[in-house]
Amino acid sequence: MREAAKRCGRKEGSGGYLNSRADVTQRVAEIRSAMAKAAENDAATTMVGQCRSSDIDRNDIIMGLTDMPSARPRPEVKGVEA
Image 1 (spheres, rainbow, N blue to C red):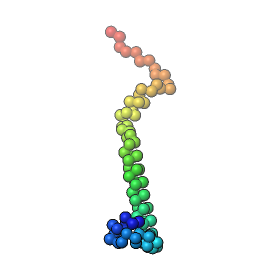
Image 2 (image 1 turned 90 degrees about the horizontal axis):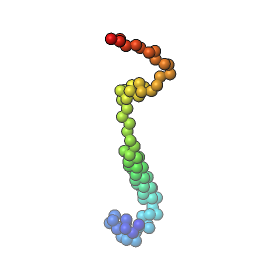
Image 3 (image 1 turned 30 degrees about the vertical axis):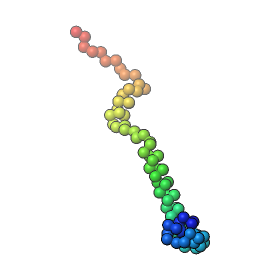
Image 4 (image 1 turned 120 degrees about the horizontal axis):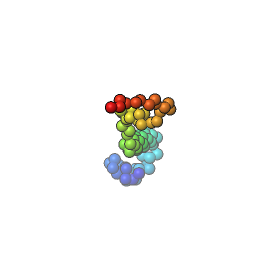
């Protein structure tokens, strides 16, 4: 608290006095919760950025379905013999 008091332009020994005040303690708690929330948002953004995006379009689905064997056997189609 001494460092914080000096940064605020107060005497070095007034840190304990400032810390004992209810309004100062409340404001410090608000700032800490805001910092924690910002850190949580940054961590979530980083995690989302690390996830791999899947780019599956309509053609990929169609090609995947045509590669699968069908449940029904296809009738043999005879071609034209010359």
